[in-house]
Image (cartoon, rainbow, N blue to C red; front, side, top):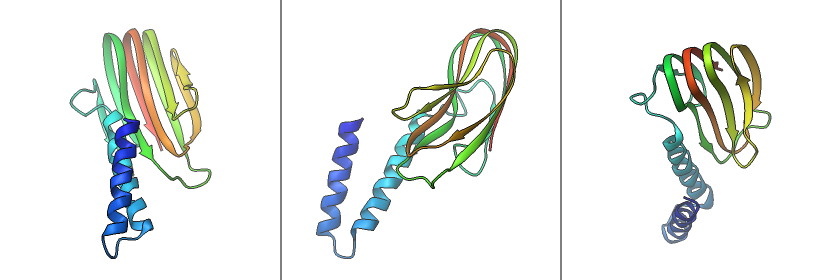
Length: 153
């Protein structure tokens, strides 16, 4: 993926120097848009999710509600990739997990170590400061039967 990204950036840079009226800022905007679009690939589609997802103002926010029956696997309802973020940009993550078996909510934030925001049964609220790059909120299950309510705002 890194090689493809570097290649696309090189092509855009070359195009920016060869095409009249296409400055560095425009090339970087185009590249940022391509990176953001590629970042959506990491999200589960609405067809593969076990529950119902509603996006908020972007793909990093919204609500997700699901019921599981002896489910082992992972779902990624929210997240994406952006080159730039406003300083101190954050989201509030609230998860309510009820049931038996293993269930975790994990924030995968770029090159940093994953952060476990919720583990096991209960209601959890955390603040996540989004860094430039990839930020995904994954649900990980091990023979979980129960329900999950997730809100990110």
